Image (cartoon, helix red, strand yellow):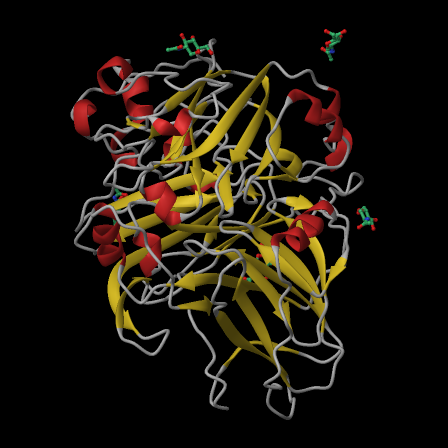
Length: 554
Ligand SMILES: *[C@@H]1O[C@H](CO)[C@@H](O)[C@H](O)[C@H]1NC(C)=O
Ligand SMILES: *[C@@H]1O[C@H](CO)[C@@H](O)[C@H](O)[C@H]1NC(C)=O
Ligand SMILES: *[C@@H]1O[C@H](CO)[C@@H](O)[C@H](O)[C@H]1NC(C)=O
Ligand SMILES: *[C@@H]1O[C@H](CO)[C@@H](O)[C@H](O)[C@H]1NC(C)=O
Ligand SMILES: *[C@@H]1O[C@H](CO)[C@@H](O)[C@H](O)[C@H]1NC(C)=O
């Protein structure tokens, strides 16, 4: 297998996939297995893709069709989620337990999706339980089509840096821990692309740069719990892209990446040719854990200085850094029109949904929730139950209120949590975090305008502080302790979409929900029919049922 990738045109493949036009196909074959590695010096079980940890990079271009044939050689069910890939009309391929049946051990399944009308730096990961704690993640990039100008010169090379906190216990040990009602506790270290430099002079470089050249680094926080500060000795970083948007190009000495977020930066190799450390260290923790990796100059002489640049302290710094992020209104989008041609600040809000971060208190088992409802996955994926018109047998819609009271956490219930949002409406979502620790929330299927993050609690008057001009369009939002954040978006992508805490413990213990967006017209213009045959597995209550084509026309 060996991660071989090849490109063919649709002419040769019309029977395979009929929906999309003449965009190129990228094919991948993945063999997913367990392995033993010692990223922190202790041998442990990891999840490998084609023998690699992290998994192979997917390098695509806007509108490419990506086909990934996954062989599950683990002894447990598996699903891959393509974090930040919008899956237009196609939540079938989103790869989370509410949309897709798992790939059973010893079987294979083929994901087919188009990276439509988006660019940027993303990552994929196994979405069941705590599997991401053992690996199985990798970078996923979507390059701009040649026709669409990029607001910076082509870099000499383009590198992916997956940073994350790391536990030496396996994902199954961690999930047993959580099942017993306890919290995860502290991770043991921080990894950069699955490694942590020891600083003994024998570390292999993660990346090599030629003197004088400019490189692009795509940095994603793929960890479980901790916000990380990322920096490179002596090398400032020019921020150019964030979760699919070109941003105003400011230069930073260090960047805070909250769990699930991705940034692209440009780095110029204009310093003394030798080794330098890239550093990722935990933020807002009593004990700071630090991971390092070597960045080497080609033909450079000399080791990296052991002096590590210091990280900022406190979350006010991070909030200020967030406030410096701006959408570049004149940069082109994945379509030729500029990013700012969509005036989100002038659209009337049709609905405001407040989601309060709630935690069980006083009960014997730890659970996390939105508005007092702690989600539990169902054996029948919610999307399939809805499509087969048997939702009422599997879940109830709209069990949480749009405007919960602040004591909503006192009575926590465990139930599948599905919100119904009217197709094409413009909605404001407020995330409120009354807790003492930072949060990171993600929405599938969309990118949203992150118009404000502020301390305190939200009220309608706070809207006057929103950035209604050049907020960055993105998919993951951090919410600082005892703070709130507001996002706005048009729900124009029909499907079933997961909203979740990116913190693995919170997500695993119920802090997620699904948003069902249905097009009343039942038109193929708005959503694809369920994929035929083994291109979409059936399980639970829909197992063995004939697949109907609910949508027609084009
Ligand atoms: C990624 O794809 C782009 C365009 O499809 C290509 O120019 C580039 O060389 C590729 N990069 C890698 C590392 O394969
Ligand atoms: C499983 O892999 C085989 C061999 O590559 C392929 O022909 C088949 O379509 C795959 N099955 C699924 C369900 O993807
Ligand atoms: C925004 O994008 C435009 C168009 O590509 C580019 O010329 C400009 O330099 C960018 N502005 C900033 C501040 O990054
Ligand atoms: C928004 O609402 C205002 C007041 O209700 C109305 O006058 C205006 O036309 C609306 N704007 C749009 C774009 O619908
Ligand atoms: C959900 O919304 C759609 C329209 O957007 C509507 O047809 C459907 O009846 C709603 N379902 C529930 C259970 O509220």
